[in-house]
Each structure stands twice: as C-alpha cells, then as structure tokens.
Length: 197
Image (cartoon, rainbow, N blue to C red; front, side):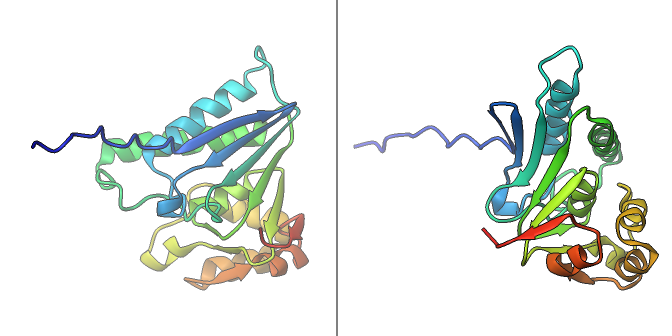
C-alpha cells in the first residue's frame, strides 16, 4: 500500500486586508515570526497602501494597521535567507521608504493598533501612523542599536516630535531599552493605552 500524498499547506499571506464599511484594516500576518517584516510582507504592504491611497480609487475613511497573534511587529526579518544580499536589501529599503511616505501622506487617518512588541522597524511603522493606540503591556524599542545598526525609518524624528528629545535620547542611547506603552503614553509618544487583548 502506497502512502497518499497530500498537497503542501499553502503559506498564509503575510498581510491580511479587510474592509468594514469605510474602515480598512491591514494586519501583519507572520505570527510565527512575531510579524517580522519580510521582503514579501513589505512588498504587499507597499502594494495595498498604494491601492488604498490612490485618489482615483475608493479610499477608506480610516485605516487601522495592526499585527496578528498578539504582536505588532518585531521589526525587519533578519533571518530571511537573502537578508545580506545587497540587491534585495535595496528592494526592502525602497519598500520601506514608499510605505512610510504613503502613511505620512495618506488622505485619511491611520491608526496603529499595537499589542506585544513594536521593535525596530515595527516601532518606526507604528510611529509613522497618525495615532498609536497600544495595549498596556506593549513594549517599544530599537534593538538594532545594540548591533551597531541605525534606525532608518524615521524613529529618531518621530520620537523627538511625539515625546521630546529626552525620550528619544533614552531610547536611542541605551541599547536594548524597551519602554512600556503606559510610560510612552504618559510621556506623550502614544495617544492612548487600552487593556491588553
């Protein structure tokens, strides 16, 4: 008796897109990797934001950006097989820049709904939104500083603008520093905290 072959399970999309009336939701969907942003995820985010912000299309009244599995995003996926490939790095950088530009220029309010970790590029993605609402236990930080990398998505400017130079200096000068959402809200970097879950 020969064993039956089963088709391999289809990999779920790294980005989920939903519409509820005039509110669109983009959900980072790699919970097994704490929603680390792969090249594929960034490409989809770039594409879907482009469709939503296209003034010729049917733009939503608001956009919610969130993460699946209780985590917003742990940042860039440094375990991606082609992480060190310079041409792929250029592709990721271009997607990042386009995504941040579209978030800043969106013709509708963009809300980051954050739970769990918002680290590195995940923190920068959240801060690029108009409003940040976070679970009380959410943690924010820039771990790339500990390995000598520089936050390239605007975290420095966003932190200074939202919370002042002191908070920005603390997060930038203490490698590995993770700040809880309730403290960032008290300091003015977030709009609101809500109970986890």
